[in-house]
Amino acid sequence: MAPATQMAARPPRGGSSFRVLRTARVAPSSPDGVPSLRERAVPLTFLDAIWLQSPPVDRVFLYRVGADDVDAVLSRLADSLSRVLHVFYPLAGRLRLTPGKTNRYELFYQPGDGVAFTVAEHDGVGVRVDELAADDPREVAKIAQLVPELPDGGAVLAVQVTVLLPARRGLALGVTVHHAACDGSSSTHFLHTWAAACAGTAVMLPKPPIVDHTFIREREDLYDVMVNRTKEFEKFISPHVADNKLLATFTLSGEILQSIKDRVAGVAARRGAPPPRCTSIVATFAIIWQCHIRAALSDVEVDKPRNHGRVHFVFPTDHRARMEPRVPDKYLGNCVGPCFASAPKKEIAATDADGLFTTCSAIAAAIDEGTRYDPDYWERCSEHVKEMSTSDGAPLSVAGSPRFRVYDVDFGFGRPAKVDVVSVAKTGAISVAEGRAGSGGIEVGIALSPEMMERFRRCFADAVAWLSSLSSSNK
Image 1 (tube, rainbow, N blue to C red):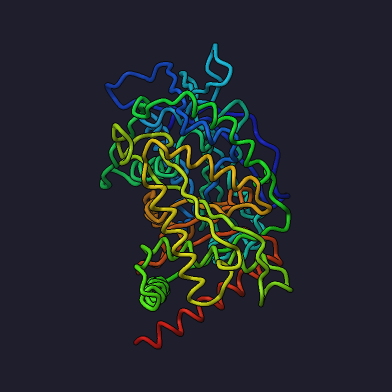
Image 2: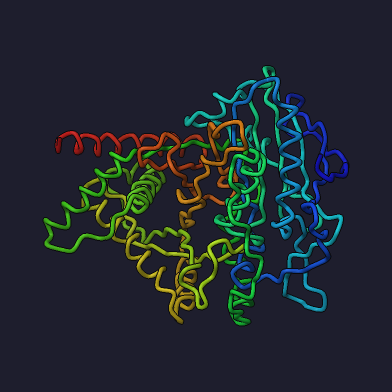
């Protein structure tokens, strides 16, 4: 069994149907013949510092399990977590101000530190796996119970396993990570490694992480900017989830994505212009951004949107391969930067092929700019942020990536039935992942108020119907 110490029980959340059974601190355990971890500190880079004030990233993985296997699964999860934390030790530590500094931070680990591992059970209405794994809108408040809060004191990782009653045939694995500790590539690397360790010796472990922040060339000027820049985004982030928010998943099939690409290419040919780079992720971002803008229009604007200036869309790009020196793929930390797309609101809201072309072009241009990691990159980002901070509406942003393969996180009892990024309800972002049905599709998660969700669903259904008709006519 993993080295673990009992922690004070948390008060129940979400009513009597949800119960916390126990919370233990799971500490890193060393393999046989390997010395125990000693005290160590990992300084945050400027790429970590920008996330200091951001809400944690909350993911929940839903699994189907046999009723008789639950206790054994809980034991294996805790034991394998302990073993994996030996190489992912910064995640077992805490975030703190660097001693002797006023605005420099570090991840500090000392023997005895560990990750809060909570076991809970839920027997409320609508919490069986099939119900929770539905794509239809679900109450965020109900799903939020399945992810843990980060303990006080600077913890950067917490885990919660909720047994879904009454049949005990479902598990909800909630994982909460402080973004200043690592980006999505690193956090999902941790999850894949943990899953492989739990699954057993027949599964090959991924390569271990590289815990060396000297790969990132420090920029003192940018560090100060990043720490202070977080204040400009505060108006776009709600630390609390509105009680009535709904979370839904919208899937774009490979066929629909191809239809988007074909329509964009058709407009380019008609205009005699080179087509924008329209990959599956560009096509996904485009149709979701359009639907989000249309859903936010007032009833008066639906048919003829007024030109209220520009709208903005922000999404991350991984810079590991672009940095000098190159940062290893398995680097543990943050190594992403933003891409900024912007266009007139009226053009993004347009429902014809020209509107789709404009939207894809804006996103493709943002990728071209964002992947040019030249000396002016961060200065350009600063100008984009200044423009966004003066805008009336919040930019639409993105969490996750199809490259993270979250549906391959198999702990030995099958692939997840559903994965949700619950924290989008706080950030206003959309989440993206590979389609769990395969065939080149992409899933998008979004949290909205009931009224806004109904508008978005109609916009999305109309867009898919239009694209499907075009796809059928080309067969």
